[in-house]
Length: 78
Length: 320
Image 1 (spheres, rainbow over the protein chains, first blue to last red):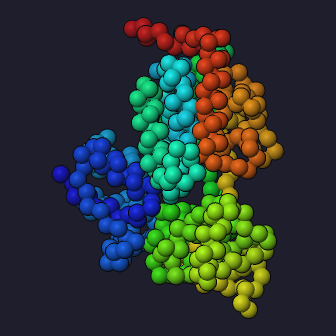
Image 2 (image 1 turned 30 degrees about the vertical axis):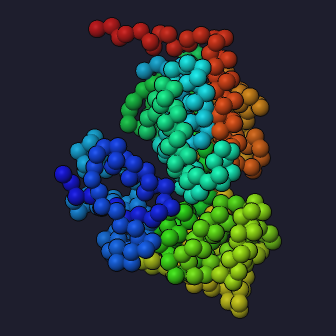
Image 3 (image 1 turned 90 degrees about the horizontal axis):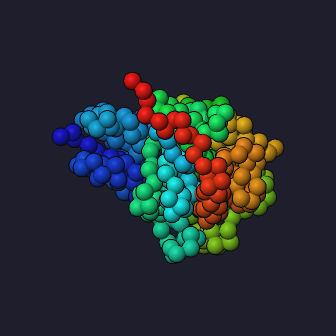
């Protein structure tokens, strides 16, 4: 099972889409709310070099935005 | 695959059209490359009748469930080709090579964010320059941001970002804020946290690895430089009219689709709905998009009843 972490904000629609996708496909994930978690925010900026959400980490591979085809490929759902 | 109706666009207009088409028992497919359209990133919606307050994403998920309950299919994909065959049947191709046939089509591809068109804007996007306050605004906790634009989506975004940011400048080209009075009242309650810079434009965007400052068209507090942590651009929308043009639908002078009040275009069997059509001039809301979708589906149904299955040749099983 892939280790999935999503860096999100509570009001971000694309983050909600990504989480709904995980739930529909029974993908377990860890969520880090970067609006309140400063450590996670810095971690996300350091890893992705940018400030847009969502950022999704699948086993160390980063995806910026809700790129469903790429996620499906990394999660073996394609 | 052959459908009675294919709807391109899965925002409020497209999904509303699919709900009505489902009730008309039309074989319906919705294809969209951005589920829910702008509503999914609009944050809380408080003016859609029946909901005192609902998140835009949840509203779209409810519409999606309603479409599915009525037998409509929803697929993600970008339609790259649309044409009408001599038989009257429409053929659609997606970027990933799938081909579909439809007796009628509704184009509800909506709009996309207008950019300022300045150097560095693209390079610094998501590095301090943003187009979605509801998405990225919360990242600027205790920071100073500037929002460019004084329209409804801009002020809604300001009101949301004010929960996080310590100071927000609103840069407005004209001399007034054009938002719903309820949003204006909320903005006023934010007091000194908000400062509106009227009759001013952003002329330059500066930054290397990260956005640093903007240069204004005229001095503010004695300087044309305005250094802020984040820049949010909300300067209006432009129509996504590629497919409209491709299938031969006439455009108005602003490149929006031309249609009548029943959403009929100059191409028989092709209808439009939502923000791609300026029926209510600049007034673009979920309720107007949904209403246009309902009307477009009704017109498509009436057309289909009159003309029957124009894609019947495509419905035949392929011969070996």
